[in-house]
Amino acid sequence: MSDLLERLRSRGWRLTAQRRVVAQVLDGDHVHLTADEVHARAVQRLPEISRATVYNTLGELVSLGEVLEVSTDGRAKRYDPNAHHAHQHLICSRCGTIRDVHPVGDPLAALPSAERFGFAISDVEVTYRGVCPACAADQPRAADPA
Image (cartoon, rainbow, N blue to C red; front, side):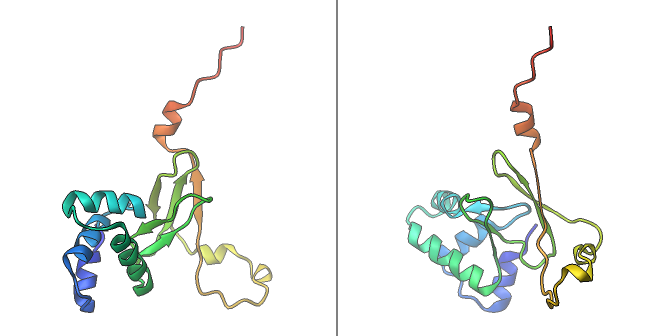
């Protein structure tokens, strides 16, 4: 489970009712919601919360480095509260489901020094793509040859 609420408290970030609800909606494992999904879930907890407040709060959380903004293939940005634990993403190329994964080894080691072109590399992002089990189950089966 992400520790987003605790991290925000320890930073002394003012947790208004609206900010708390947004943080609660985002808190958890494998959470990668769009801003509209965050808003829809936040309204269930706090009906008067506005879309603008949700968007502004998400922007603040990203600026603070407490939430990651994940962009995938032209789809809506998603927000990941797992900002302080090294991980990569596994994305379904059909429905867009995102899961956090923790591969073994150093991804930077896979890049030969000749391919670094003198860069001082500060970060590595690896994205794994495939088809999730739900989408694979929905796939029409090929007809048997006659």
